[in-house]
Length: 178
Image (cartoon, rainbow, N blue to C red):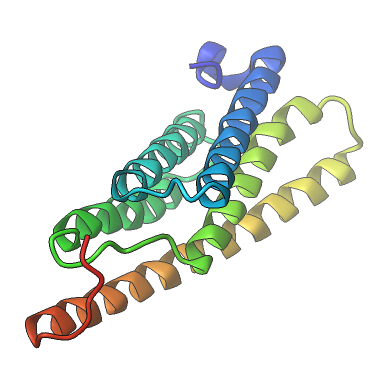
């Protein structure tokens, strides 16, 4: 809501949107770290945490598209993958729990960095020299492009892993039961 107020043109609200987004991502990181460190990882958490992450990313990406700072194809590509993998995980939970991969974590870091830069750029547009603004915009797009590529690659990888787990379970292999 902070991002959409005044069509995304209120600098103060944009700063607050950035702070809230980064704080939410930070608390997600801390939650995951504490769960792993204290061996509190649960099957529920393996499903619920990615859904919360995807919801936060979806809100930010859709918000940036609504205020025309991202073309709609960016959130569409990312969110089709994100929600497709969520559906796949729900389907696969009867066979095996598919935990987050290292690639998925890299994807999340890239998406977070790109979104944060896109949230940051507008408030800086009146403060920094045009060349600095342009450089920041180029960096944001480079990171977003990397995020899109990693999003697609990890989505394909999850599908391949799911197919292997499914095949293994159907042939009596050692799939990790959820």
